[in-house]
Length: 101
Image (cartoon, rainbow, N blue to C red):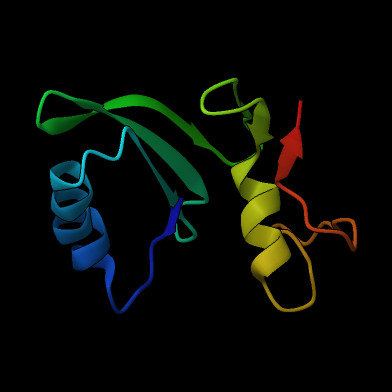
């Protein structure tokens, strides 16, 4: 899972994707705090193909590589100072956004 950073965004979106594909990493998940989104890519041949994209409070549920639910708004909010959602709502004090299914 890659958290896109403002200073390394181009590297995260392009260079790291190329490096991970060359290393045959089957899945590449990108969390974009600016868009409060998660993009899930799967390696097909030598390139990644987008498999899913969720934003905000939408959840991404999968059993690959293990059973997990990811909610971008909760994941990003947990990392923000003060632990609040961008809209001002509170989140739990425990790490949120990723839950085992």
